[in-house]
Image 1 (cartoon, rainbow, N blue to C red):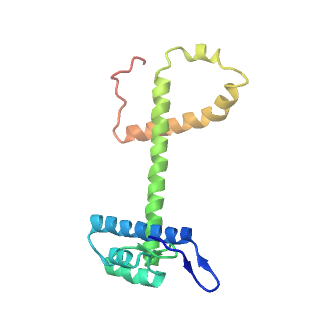
Image 2 (cartoon, one colour):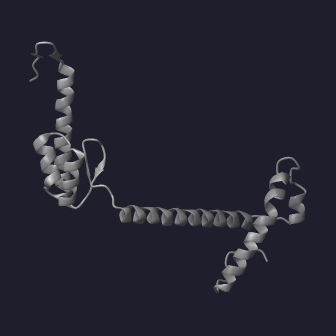
Length: 172
């Protein structure tokens, strides 16, 4: 139950007290969730007991005790990462970006090959239907690079012992 409390020069409003009570309840619920996932620990105890997050220095100590980073009252995660940890994370992100870039290229290659394999008519007949304003500038801008890259890919593919399968290929 919330009561209006008067001081000599101010009144504590109901909404501020209610918001504070809600925040404490949310932190206690978070503490219960932490305990469910990781077991009871110093961080969940602190949240349950105090109904607030620890200040950054306290959070750093608690984080070291529980062997993980915890959220402090200022929103920071404590303890702060070491230079070696930051470098390791940066390297992992770089590796992930590189893997993603290669996967995107493989996907584009696969889609392009699958699309080209669907073409049935003679290139001389297809050229007659290239629109001079819409198709031709794009083809002109990309054809040489695409053919050169695909030729290098085929050479590398074959040098690794990969030979295109004739299964499903209806064209020679």
